[in-house]
Image 1: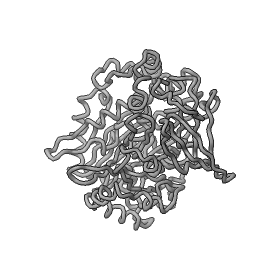
Image 2: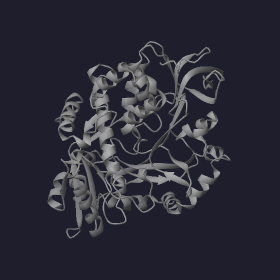
Image 3: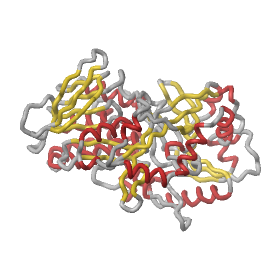
Amino acid sequence: MTKKKKTVGKTDADVILIGAGIMSATLGVLLKELEPDLSIEIYERLDIAAAESSDAWNNAGTGHSAFCELNYTPEKADGTVETKKAVQIAEHFEVSKQFWAYLIEKGLVSNPANFIRKIPHMSFVWGDKNVEYLRKRYDALQKCNLFSDMEYTEDAKVIDTWAPLIMDGRKKDEKIAATKMDLGTDVNFGSLTRDMFNHLKEQKNVNLYFNHEIRDLKKNKDGNWIIKVKDLETNETRKRVARFIFIGAGGGSLPLLEKSGIPEGKGFGGFPVSGQWLKCTNDEIIAKHHAKVYGKAAVGAPPMSVPHLDTRMINGKQALLFGPYAGFSTKFLKNGSFLDLPKSIKFNNIRPMISAGLHNLDLTKYLIEQVRQSPEDRLDALKEYLPTAELKDWELEYAGQRVQVIKKDEKKGGVLEFGTEVVSAGDGSIAALLGASPGASTAVSIMLELLDRCFKEDLATDEWQNKIKEMIPTYGKELANDATLSKTTRERTSRVLEIENA
């Protein structure tokens, strides 16, 4: 680490990572590859890594690459489709795949089949207006090479070959359309996260602590950070000192950011959204569907609630989910407290939170409707995608909590953000990750942004630049503007990750 990070005063670790999810795992591996002598401590309040948002059942989207998620390509007032965010996410997912390929090539992670599988990504809509939108979306995305392999059809017979279950029992005169990307993948971020932590804990000067909760953190006069951590098994509390702190605690990040007292963290609020899945219990039905099929979200729905009929591999077995159905809870974590939301309200963020609430009444209405749904209501929603669905073949599974970011806005007072937000101190000594979608799928790009903010001097060195380019060969280049580089990169990562002909 540079002289800036080599602060005076005794420390217990160079880096402390709070939360054992995909973000901390990614940052930990990146830093350890870039600076092998770095000392790292990781603290997780639960008894296993990736048990909150990174877990396969808790994650609202596994493999976000913007191929099929329609909320990343909004239709503008003039009728055109905006593709900027979709292109960015698709490019970021390619960065993630390059990093994962590096992990495999170097033997840091053993078997790619443990966490990534090839699965087609589809968008599916019905009704004249939605079909027109999907056609325009397809045409707009065709201008970018990252989406050049996308197929579009309004032919029911073709869609039937892609995903027969969604066509079984459907009205023959219904106006429908679909797109398909065979390059799509399913990623089990829980498995990937645990694999990365298994590697990290075997490294010199790395210690991973489960059942440990961060109770407080503050900055010393010498520039170091002190955390107060409680061992939940022994009830013992101790203090640890580090030069750099990363708060990657999912929904638990906001309260810790507030405790840090950094001016950059003031004014942020959080709006928690819970979720539920319908999980198929009929193996015969599960075996007939091999795709992630995304539709259009209801008016007022948050991005994590975009409905999809989703094939996933969980614990080595194929699963089929539909949802997620949104809900509301004042918890910031699935295993959190109902007091999380009230406790997060401070003098510096109450105005943005009230303002964001007033500007998102349609979201409030939507969440109330979702909470009041009966099993029959959920089945009706499923039948829009699976006309022959029967309630006996599905059971309710609780998903994770998401805390959407509320931030100050000069004009509106406060706005509700649906992306991810890196908040860092001006001196780069602490950073927190807030928000949800697209989250895990773009973790590598998010952590590279964090390195640029918090380790700028290190990142400028030849040693770090060369190592990053070894891990991510296209670092500093834009795949969206280079069709040849995009093609060769995808061919290489598909081969290494063993999804080439899967």
